[in-house]
Length: 130
Image (cartoon, rainbow, N blue to C red):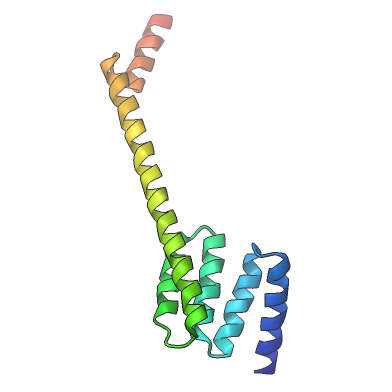
């Protein structure tokens, strides 16, 4: 219990200086787990996952934090706000992926209308060269 408390203090202090250090978030999550603080454990794990580019896993951790059954009003409010932020980011990324896919399909259709697929145009160019 004393070691976990000391590790938590160290991780929390260091995160004040370097909030984007994934390893520190991992240490913080493990420390909270050892202390039985489930809400904070899942919140710290969510931060680790988002820093690793795993937005879906991060959202899942925040959902687990909401259901943890511990934590005070302030901690729950922080989790709720962070979850809303990540869900909004997920919608933005999904929109961007859809937009990129649409742009690719439009370009492909335009290429076919202008004389077939890119592969066929290259084949025709090869025949003209030889």
